[in-house]
Structure formats: structure tokens, C-alpha cells
Image (cartoon, rainbow, N blue to C red; front, top):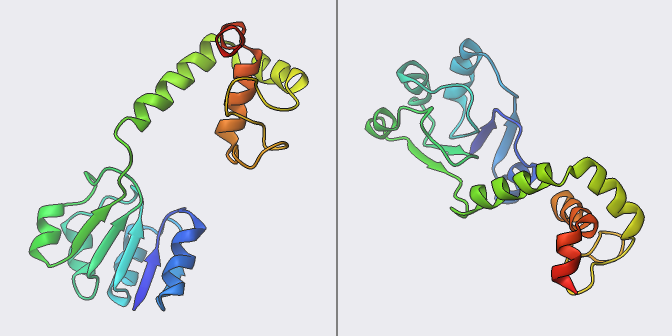
Length: 167
């Protein structure tokens, strides 16, 4: 089985496919004409949102592609009904439905708290963990492994409201 990845996705996608014996080629954002040339050589297409897969590209894919894996939540850039007619399965990534709302609220709070200044003050003050919470900086705990959680910890450390609530 051969797979073509045409957008920047997690390296775990390619390594996971390779572990299952799939030969993986990566060509980031090829043009439409180039994609038409490539598609008949692959069984699986891995993409995000570009390019729009219309009937023309799906006809080129129909010669061999059995599945299109979309590494995003939406599939409105693919003519799914036509893909189904051609026998091409389209699947996408799922995520927690509240995730976008949660992220939006955090970003609003960061804007309201002037996050650039808060992150700097939090870095100077915090240096460890925040009392009464499970948020720790990456230097002191493996629990905070992502940039977002460490940034949130520094923001929370600099916030008078958070310090009052967490004590």
C-alpha cells in the first residue's frame, strides 16, 4: 500500500503508517496539475484543507485511491457525495466539541490579562508550580508538556484573581 501526504501534518502520521507497512511519500501542497499526476500512484491520500478536491481531482484519484484521510475536522473542501459514488472513503479527524470553545475562552482571558506582560512576570515569579493547582511549568513536572499548558501556568501565576482563587 502507498500513501501520499500533501500537507504539513504531525510526523506521527507518517511514522504510524510506516509501522504498518505502508510506503509513504510526502509532497507538501502540490499544484492541481501535479496532484492529478500523483494521485493514480497511491492508495491513500492524507491531507488537511488544501486543495479543494472537486470532481476533476476525484476522477484522477478514482483510478487507485481508496481513502482520503483529512487531518482536520471539516470535509467541506471535498465533494464527498461524488467521492462516495467513486468508491473513495473520506474520513476526518474528530475532536472534543468543547475544545474550540475552551480555547477561545482561554485566548480571550489571555488578551484581557495582557498575556505578554503576564507571561514575562509569571516566568520571573513562578519558577515552579502554582499552589493549589495541578499546573506546573515544564522545568518542574512532566505533567505540563505542551507550550499551551506552560503558558497558561505563567499567565495564571501572574493573575491576581487566579492567585486569590487558588489559595
